[in-house]
Image (cartoon, one colour):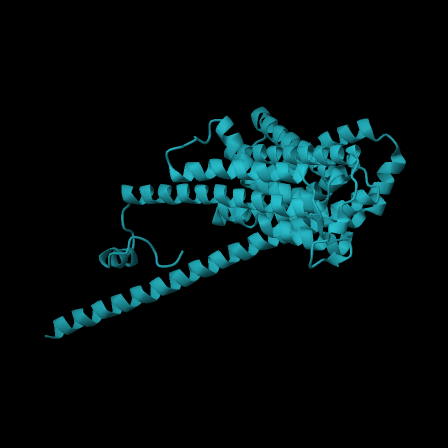
Length: 390
């Protein structure tokens, strides 16, 4: 009898311990997800601040070629110092192949990407730029298909959602470029009603500038998409994230400096860009390139790229509000309608990728894995195929 009571008591203690462990692990998972969501939102807030400061700097006469040189030099220095000490034991030897990959990453992800972004921002506005950037996930899918990384699956719902998302997003971008419409937010703040008096005449040069700006912003999204795809092989061959980013910024800074010297040979322009726009440069280099991009990489690692992309519209909303209040920009109906289409296209692509990832995880679970803890045994015995909270 005593042995039966001991076994019963011991079994009850094991069950209680398993339940406590299950609750604790679920709570930890929930708190971990909360941290990732907060970090992803902070990334978009930090990027929104840079959109406003960069737009203000360009309006004040900052050079579109000199500005990114200073920005990336300011980003390279602190990131390189941190990477030198943090990754000194894991940093691999820099071979010719690895150097070529990082050089290509600097050309596409830093030099071309930032030149196209600043040119597009100059010809349009911060709100336009932030709205068009919602196309990045859709264009990343298109580029991945062209590189053979993704496959078009027309017979599956998730494949249809991604293709529809690309078409809807591109339609929204086209609408933004071709249709202006009446203003709904003027330079002094919010207008609660749409006025018909805002049908100002816009010359051909204004339309050409707008189209040039949208084309540059689309090019910015494409180069960013290619850079995201290149991160896989780069980090596979050079598995030191901070060092890879620092070297990418370094190579990109050198390439930007060469371009800037070709277009801006007046040293007064260099000095004026540095001293008059120093707050925007410090923010862009230390916060946008340093903190925000590193934090974005952590969010993509912990929560997946789908989660990071899902928070992209937050930046658009913040930029639209701040542009009206700080920069006194006018927000038009065409931008609103087109922006909604772009955001709908974004979420169609994100939903398709999330569904694919979920199906992939289900297939991985079905392959089976050895049970390594009494908690997992308890869960299996109770008929639960996955944790209660993720």
